[in-house]
Amino acid sequence: MHRQLFQFAVAGIVGFVVDAGVLYLLLAGGLGYFVGRMISFLCAVWVTWRINRRFTFSGASNMTAWQEWRRYLIAMSGGGLINYACYSVAIVALPETRFLALSAVAIGSLMGMTVNFIAAKRWVFKEEM
Image (cartoon, rainbow, N blue to C red; front, side):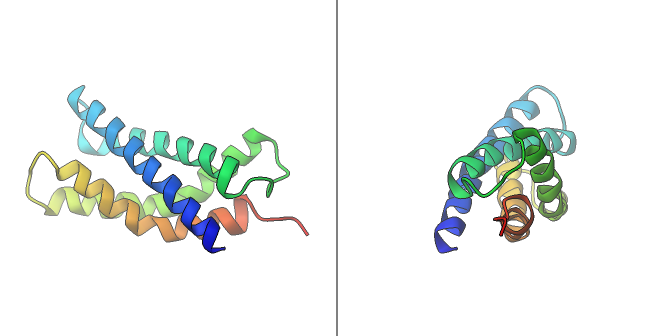
């Protein structure tokens, strides 16, 4: 389990980079903090699913890729709601700097990670008996 938690955290770091990178691109393109974050979050979920299914939980699922993706997206939505709520509070409460979005994404990501790990391990990639 420690190995899986470590690999899940590594996938989360990659997801964080994707999330923040896409968000900054969308902000530069004129989208706001909140709509941009919804899109960047979906991009990060896609990337972390690909990493987690290949490395963290490889061989644990007997679903098709699309069934697994749908289940993963649903599972990550629980942590995603916590993530987005914390991100939103940070956007509103923290002073406006050029690192505001990055700080808010980090805060939200850390808060949602535990819920997401448990959902991934116990529901999406659970090993069949």
